[in-house]
Image (cartoon, rainbow, N blue to C red; front, side, top):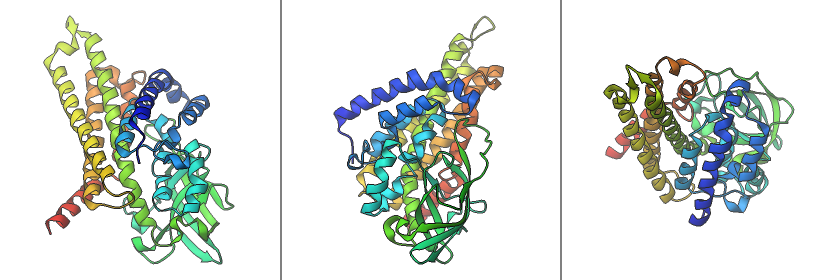
Length: 387
């Protein structure tokens, strides 16, 4: 699956122009009001951003992973809340249905997801299970041709906007084999949302608890129609999402670098621009080298992802994806820290973008698998290969 090169060569500059002319100028509004303006969301839908990774047969653009990371890199150059509006539709909200859904589920759900008519959200994390996703406690008890769901999901991105959830619940015994993945409409009786989370950064993103109290979901809403495959579906989805997030991290590092270089060029101390001082240059150089290394890694592993058979798990590719997620999200944290340092006291003041970006990028090392989970995946696979 890939968009033809001629069409992609039109899409990418269009996205770049949209970011430059519409999103960057709206960053202050976003920070002040904690909301992405409705007219910008409408433009995102018109551009097809909600369907970047969904095949054309279902109304999407159908980008390959190699193409998607290029778009994600550009999107990373502005406030991360803008990407969050459509990010769950592109990634973890829809990919489980695309990879493992029945033909009927794909036909019913994916066109509405691609158009932005339906916002999908991915509900895996719980109060007592985050990184240890196989231990989730939300129960789904079979009752005739329905399952009755009870439990709480936590930190669910786009839950306040969602029309439906890709939701993991336990239909069987303990461990990963007892987990199933459901398509759960947000308007079902018994489903309610907790109060919005107040986060360190990423103002404009919407997260909250999803609470299920005797929510009846048709058995036909199990993704793929077979219970017990939900954990495998979730893990397959995360590979693509982790590459996407890594590309966003590189894009944000690029933006922070641009802000830092401009400040170092214009800010005068001791009678000359601070950029003339070698210690400032050293910080810029370290950030640039790490950015180029991270971005090269993203592109190389994206090619490997595209080369493997569609919808098939490859432990070696997953290990490499974890290397990318680990390196790039840690890298952008270091770049942001140096950016604040280069700005001096101004970097600690909200009117400068680097202060916001410093807070925003901290989350990248936590969601879609923490740095420590990536380390475990990498180490485990290296030992498996050695054996």
